[in-house]
Length: 227
Image 1 (tube, rainbow, N blue to C red):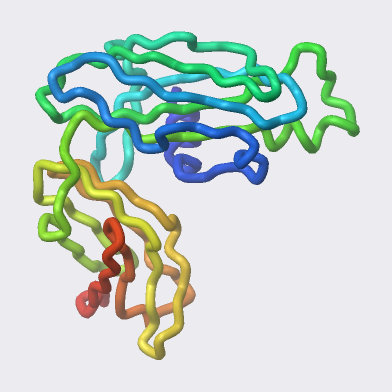
Image 2 (image 1 turned 30 degrees about the vertical axis):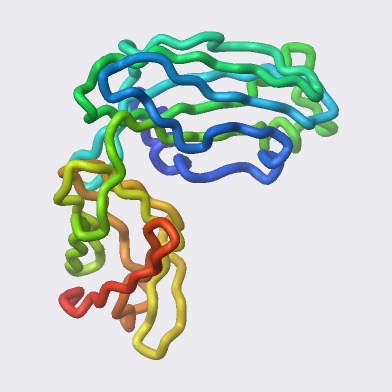
């Protein structure tokens, strides 16, 4: 289980190159704060039949890192299904009452076909099976005013001091001469009253600002205390 959760944490925002051939809607799922039903739609424009698996994990943040546990209180169906070319599958979910404080990750994976032997002809495609990882929230969206950014030696802590979740995108570091250095992830979620720690590029000691956007608004935070 530890290895699974570590892999999920490191890949949680990544989509394989072939993922544009599946359509998943919505990509950010709203769940009723008082508990109830929601759903996602998964469609295929692939030229082959695929077998898909859906899993749901409870999501919190501890010590500046994402933490995932099986969400046994979330009921959903179907868990495993075949998706034909041009077909669409609705996955229906029933979430518990969280008082508006629920956060989950929905992981959608393509499963290997039993008829496919891992020969040299299929190995490349088997190694890039489709995957989507979605966020599902039962709470409100937070405000940029709730975000606090603390720089320490080698890291930047994104701290959410509010009751709503924050979604930061277009994350990147800026050097003192205006160059852009990529962050370890381009999109980050910070859950209510939690923090997420990003490493600073070890080979760029001249980093002085973190650039990010919330919604359509870009921001830049100076990192004067990073030393």
